[in-house]
Length: 468
Image (cartoon, rainbow, N blue to C red):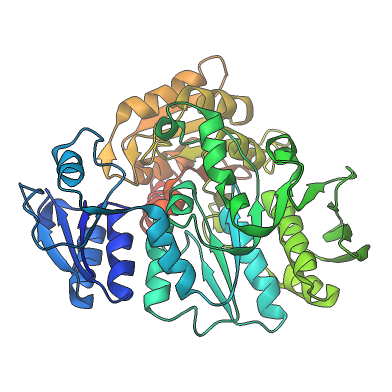
């Protein structure tokens, strides 16, 4: 079948690749020329061309379509656009996300565990993978650790044959990926939580955002959900709820003296166990979710204990960087208010010590409530250094940094706006003393991990020399 994909954006690229993988003759078009795309996207498009996709970039007239069997049009193409009217008028077959999802579903012949939610998707995905790996499974893991656009990461894995080499797949499913993979059948679907985020993509509606996340309930055999989501889920669904503390859940856990104790009642299994646990903060709750998945799948308790005790965290998530001039430096990706609070509570101020926050631009590709974020920071930090540089879009926006600091205006925190995290790193040393804690938060720890971490450390090292 001859297919044209209109739009080489985040939906169009994986759609074109999977259509090509399925044996169709594929052309992808976009008004932008190759050099107008970000470097990473240029690399992907060139890779697609090598795979056999015909690139028609810088195409001014998308209606110049001849001898085509079907067309996929990217969701971001306006509904009243010329090309959409052309497709209707000429009665061309229109491919939709469900068609792409069916190809993906037919390609993956192993059990799939999908993880969605607002916070904790990545760490939960990797804890689940660690448990199954320790149980002897060959695990295909797809998460934001492999790339910012999960649909491309998953398609890339299929093209590379990762699903063929593996016994089970554990896939992180952000809201955009869920839309493209709506027909993918899940053995287990995990919902970590649902909070306000990305609402600019959903007309400001939390309900619409939640509905997108809950799409996985339509194609999964079993749901594992945080108790926080209970009111959002249909009571008729086959759902296992997990929680921390002594609350009444199917799977619950407590953390004491470096051990995690989990109590469970899942299907015909009931009991409790404890095991060593090396981590802190949100890793605890996400480990309970992972244990609930493993118990529901039928893994032995010893395999679950082994996986939890061996898991040592993932980069950019409550990551310890080191000691610099007797300041402890940590690196985290929190940027949603609920996640920021969870992270900050792991660093209580003791005595005359200070908590110094470095925050990169919270917006990434979506505007966020920077005033609210600043207000939260002001309640915990003695020094707030806000960078205006958007690590995701490579755009300097000092207004964003100033909005964060404006939110903290009622606090006694020292508030500084800077152009980048290198300068923030320098000033974090200047405005701290031995015994203080320096903590980075912000989405750049996910979207630009290596570069951001490098710049911050170099800035801190420079500060150590400038302000001994």
